[in-house]
Image (cartoon, rainbow, N blue to C red; front, side, top):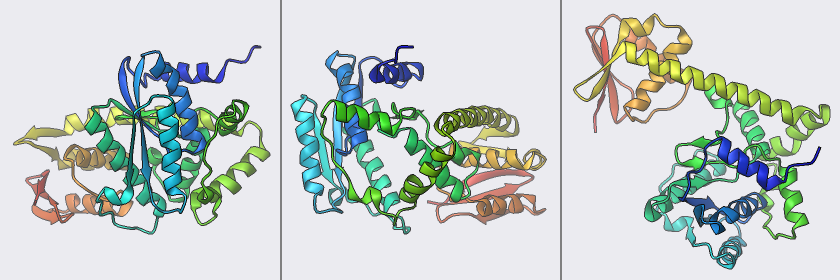
Length: 327
């Protein structure tokens, strides 16, 4: 059987999952590493054919001495191919992010802020990220170790809001093979091999052990993730349907029937509350203890107010409950 060219497979994946609309303006996160350089070359023909408009965006985290040269590498790659290039230093963003012990998390939030900013400034439609199949595996096990729910274990989606991931079913070995065969240069980040980061330990120790244990691991993992995501999609639709049955939109607020909420299965109660909080666009920690606190309050007999956050509280009166923002 003739092997389908790699780019063709990825372009078919883009079409199948409706990741890109014709004539879309797309921001590509370009770090200079092999994955983002590969994605750049995947999307470049679509830009050259006039099917999309590509803009390369690079955030300099300023953490490594060679960070400035990384930005120059990305700029040269973009300019060589007549692609607009936007670069910022993390210190220029003016972000006040709370450090929770994870340098990776700070970097992720900074990149998201930067990409969102560039998208608005240039009126772009999508932001393309270079996460591949092994990134998906790492994310799954990272969340598994942290006790994630089903929603968390579905890991990354090919398309979520304005973010698209065209390489999510592409293996890292295929990416590196293509770059080497075509003599395409890329940067290597020394921190990717540091065992100080949990994700790196999963990449270097867990995944190779699973792949050596069974050569079917990659294919079976993809199959499992696909089924989990299909299950999650179904539950999201069911949650929205039930929410409409037990809630009413009144005075610009969603009011829930407490009795109808409490008789639901615990899993659906959790999902309904999560859906409710998202609908009201309030900040909250995603933890089981937090949701248990809400249930205990709603299950109490008295009508009262319970402060859940510095910016909002829950009010319960005559077995109806709603969120009141305090700022």
